Amino acid sequence: MRENGRLIAYVLNESGPRLSEYVFHALDIYRQHAEQLVVVVQDNLRLEPLSLQRLETHANSVWHTRRPRSISNVWTTLRKRVGREQLTSYSEVLLVNDNSFVLFDEQMPMPNDPGALDAWTLARPDLAQGRERSQLNWLAVPGRTLEFERFWSVVKSSTTTLDEFREGLLEIGLEVGTVFERPSGNDVYLVRDSLHDLIEQGLPIVPWHALTIDPLAADRWAILPRDTYDLVIAKGYPEELIWQHLLRVLRPRTWYTNLAMHEVIPSCGESANDSELVTAIVMHVYYVDMLDELLGYAANVPGRRRLVITTNTDEKRAELDDMVSADGRFDNYDVRVVTSNRGRDISAFVLDCEDVLRDESIDLVVKLHSKRSVQDPATVSSWFRRHLFDNLLANPAYARNVYALFERESQLGMVFPPTIHMGLPTLGHAWSLNLGPAIELAPRLGITVPFDSTTPLSPYGSMFIARREVLAPLLDAAFTVDEFPDGDEYRDGSLAHTLERLISYIGMSRGFYVKTVQSTELAAKSGVFLECKQTELAQYLPPYAVDQAAALYGNGETWPAVSMLKRIVRLRIAQRSLLLSKMLDRFAHFRRSIRRRIKRS
Image (cartoon, rainbow, N blue to C red; front, side, top):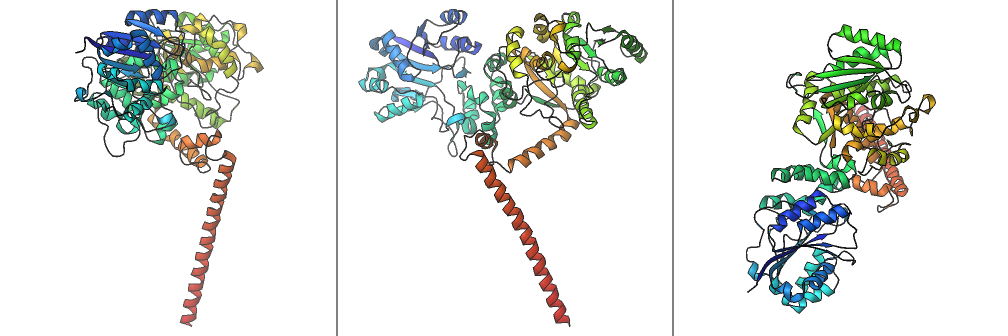
């Protein structure tokens, strides 16, 4: 008879020096079900002092090992630290790790007949490979099994993964069972084929890979990580723990895509006057003739609002003041002249409106400006303005629906229009010359989240709606007028353009996610052009986007230039064949008509 209860070894495989909160949440749950809870830190991982201190308060022991990360190494560490005889005294030794978050709380999952098993996992292994593979790292071994010398022979074989270790146990004749049954039939990929069914059955852990999977791989198999997210939240997992981790470890475009953080907003609903949120509308007006248009959009903002207008001369200030007064829709407003127009709307916002952005009575900040984009053709600049204004504040009902997002979602820090793709070369190129300066500025702004590789998740055109506290690091960075560009210096790589791309990353680093918002009207008009571009490009590439990217990176089955050339040739042959077929049809029709005429004669 076993004298002790359960020993749980929680292995740090995926974590970095600063641990995410989900680790401590998991330890709190495991501790309820363990007589002894130990944390194994592998591969000489150097934890931050605070993370290590917290680990020591959540677990009975924290053991460090310099060995490479492998399941054999964990068992070797347990044998060395606990002793083989002591290990056999436990009713069960459970190995889990940090690649998953923990859903269960009260009841430890067990197989139907644990007495008939030598070990058990949660479910059959995932048969997927590479970026599509997920692993449920959960191996329970009864103390009696640890008495077998053949068990330790598998440990000595230096297996790396749980699935390899499981196969090793089966090869020596041990009975390894599962707690849950994956559905039969076409069940190959865990995340694609059976994860939701397992969660409904009571799966106690969910691999982070279900949410962090490469979006192109998810696209290939029509996997919707957002559905998994909604399911685990419905099961009671703390939403803030998911975001605390995702914001730290993922490039924003990955979680933005996987969790469907784009909202298509209807232009109907509640009245525009029932929001309790207080808004500061900060508006830089260089082109006075655009004020009426700007005021029209600003008037759509629901609830109590304060209007602050900046401009560059005293003459414009007086004219703008008269126009706002005559408009009559804004009781609480002021018009101020900026210290300098260097940096235009960005410097006006950061330097000349600091008092507004630090006003704790303000909940949300709406940033607008008289964007004319004179360097672009009129069609492009007009579309850009429409893309910005109508997707933020199309009408009172639309704006009220946007505000409802902030009221429902406490971790939503900012919304802005999706990346514009018509008329401007943004998709895949939006960092332009700003990535280097952005990396240099990141520490000054407290940015700790990863940068996107090609197109940052940012408010292009620098118009957005944000929680006021999200913007504090912009002010704390203490920029000066001389740091902003002037005249010909106002271009990509300058501070203004760099900050435009970094504002959203500041909020993410403070624990807030962002969303893009789009009106139904503009979604319909913009979406078809995006589909058209994808269709035209895809005909020269492999069928699926994940393979297209691999081919262009040179990682596909064929070098991209060869692959593209083959498709062009096939396309041209098909086009010529179609032309030849039409010519033959016409010739056949001509012959038939001649024959009919001969017969008649």
